[in-house]
Image (cartoon, rainbow, N blue to C red; front, side, top):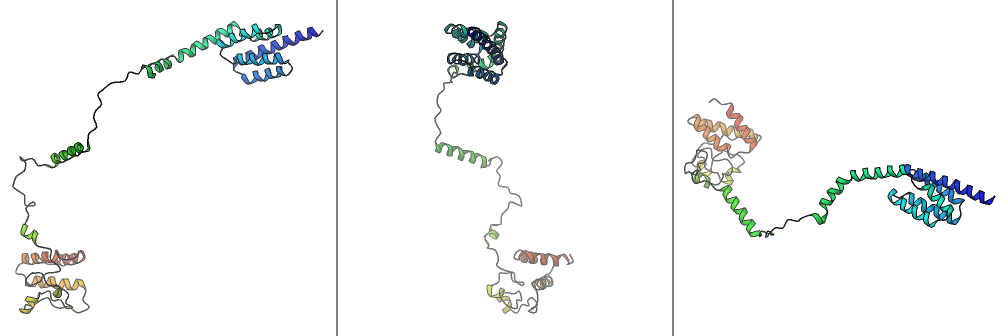
Length: 273
């Protein structure tokens, strides 16, 4: 009775392990482990170890699993061999696994060929003569040479003739700029004392001593614009021609601030040509 029960238990375990093999082949590894653990709970120590070895062999590649199972079959007893035989993949399953392995090999063949072409041992390095590093002096000389040829003037294009805009009056350029408004009579630069007079008549000290009439002195409440307009009216009254008037106004205009220039320009725009 006990022998028959043991044989029945072995057959049931073999069928269960066959199902475990099918689950592993289908990719259900977690369920296969769960069923194997359930079988191991009721098995002996030797059978439990054999079940672990079978499960480990089944989780490997079919090309590796079959030799491992064959080895387990050789070293096991009759009951163990029954378990191993139940887990051996069928011929159809092995053929399908071989076909899948061949497909994977073909899919990765191009990648493996490319890797073999690029592996370090197959790379041929280019041998060449090392170029010496240029010194800083050579670099500076090249920079100076390029700057020279960029800025040089072609002798064929360089002529002594200059346009009206390029001509320079060296005498006028040597004269320093005038400080303040010039004398309305003689046009020379006035001294600081003449420019700071409380009642400015627009004259220099020499013209004032000679008795030359100057700009009419405005009241103390006169604005800056009124003083400038009085000066413009004096220049217009003492000029022989409009051209002389404009020349004297231009001379004053160059010595004025921006706000004063607008005042003179507005006054000049209202005058007849």
